[in-house]
Image 1 (cartoon, rainbow, N blue to C red):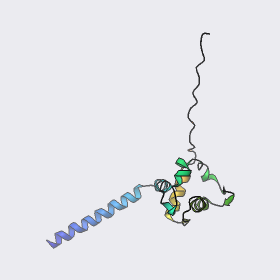
Image 2: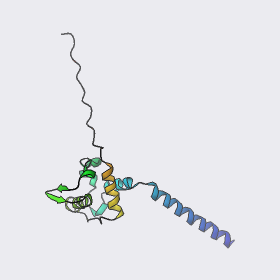
Image 3: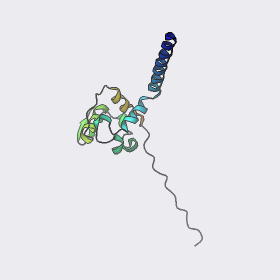
Image 4: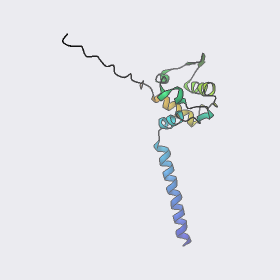
Length: 131
């Protein structure tokens, strides 16, 4: 009876680990970064990054930049720019540039490349006929 109980408990533990690993590896860095980008509690800030950069608007070219000028200050990397916004605009705490959270947020921002919000199509007025 004890042997069966041990097997059942061990099986449940293994199943839980497999499910946890599958869940963690299922999400891409871009998806995890987007979740952080939309999280008001990220880096102990006062609001989510998405509140100022709705759907990443304005960050579409960030992947190509080598320097960033934010609020009159030059940042030499995307990680520095992210931390500058977190600390100065969002009143949060800087995130370690080598942390998984920073890598995920940077991956999300880089995924925005070329995804500039498309302007709605302009409706053409039909010419008035027969006057």
